Length: 286
Image 1 (spheres, rainbow, N blue to C red):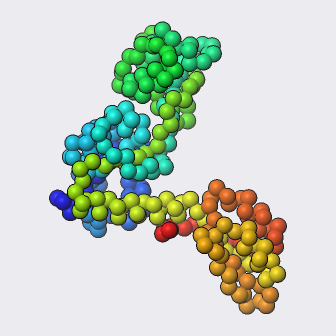
Image 2 (image 1 turned 90 degrees about the vertical axis):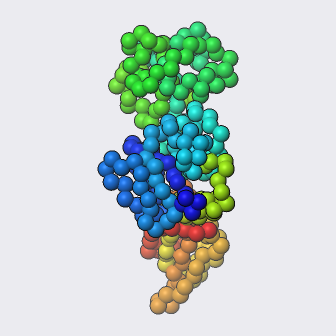
Image 3 (image 1 turned 120 degrees about the vertical axis):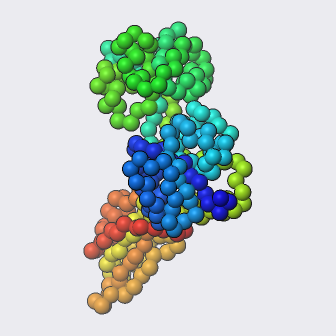
């Protein structure tokens, strides 16, 4: 199996969906039919294990899986002896403290001497220690939000995405203690052959991520404005300029970052650019 990289992926849920979507965007083909716990790629040296997310860090540490994709919160909580080789930028969420919506809140010191229910005792304990707060931590798995209403705890510490689950359980978010996103973990003792496969996989991921963060734009520009337009554009090296059939006009092509898109477009229009086309990029090799 030294020529095959074994990857552990959460078997269901949003993180699983996002992970498999990324892998497919990397051109890696596989069939993970309903209920299957194992699959193999048909065009890349990779084998898939579909597991519970909280088991993945341990499986990677023990070498049962070579790499794994999990939420940063799970990696931090399990605290296994593995390498974090890539932040993946999706499945973002936060770990937050919440209390009854009718309770007043003045700051984290309000938890002094109180009880908190959570599935993340390590992260919560580290946070409370950093804030010099002594509180009782009750570790429970699942349905953490119900703890205050049944008298199990004064507050909770749980994963929050939109906050709707907290609201539906009569709670309010009062402190964000950890921000999480999907990360890729790797066993510390990978063979060189497997490290080479991992590098190829990461190369594909970075090409996909770069494409998502950038847009390809084309525009018609009067030749008299080309110098001004090219100063506005933050091209990868320099914009491509090609003459049009209409004398005195050129087509200018470049790539711009998604975050800068609207501001730059307004500047380009003001400088005389017309017929601006914006095209998504499927892959981008830097």
